[in-house]
Figure 1 (tube, rainbow, N blue to C red):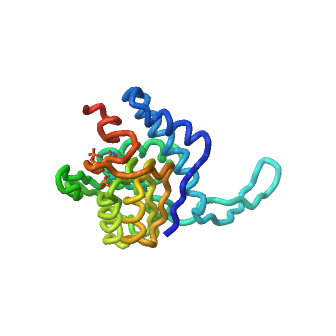
Figure 2 (cartoon, helix red, strand yellow):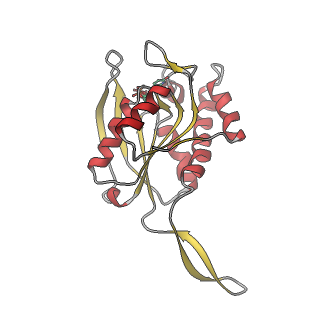
Figure 3 (spheres, helix red, strand yellow):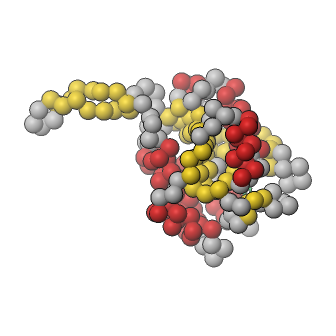
Length: 208
Ligand code: PRP
Ligand code: URA
């Protein structure tokens, strides 16, 4: 499996502010969206293009356009929702599917509570998004879910990952490319990423 750790200075600067406990809900939300845009730029680098003939004001030109059915973005609810706008800014034609999963705080196992996918999801490149990859339980379940729809071309984009989560995705889904802005030190006893940023959903939606 390919793991892409995106180290662009603009991205790393925004991530530094995101991690700060003094960052407000408003700023946090804006930063998650901006980071998603910057990460999406890298994660879409290998989208297939096709040559098309057009007429400019000066002459005919052969130009490149994205080929085929383009993308679907699938946020893992709730926190993944915070990344959708930033991606739609770059890829306005993309469709959006939703997977509702939460982690049982005792077992840390993902529990599914909602799912709605575009009808043609199987023919699209799918970008699953969630700010946090901790144990990897939620992401691996979401990937399997999407695979069950017949999707072959799947990428996972998370802002911060724990080494445990990266390893889990590598083992369970070696065909899935992973894009992250940071791989942190470890998980703590409650399954939180250290140093991380706390609970991403709570920080995006102001629920704590
Ligand atoms: C968080 C996060 C991921 C998951 C990561 O969601 O947004 O979905 O935990 O943990 P894992 O890799 O160990 O599965 P949470 O369950 O807190 O739900 P929320 O987004 O509704 O807050
Ligand atoms: N989910 C979060 O939101 N944060 C963590 O650190 C781990 C899981």
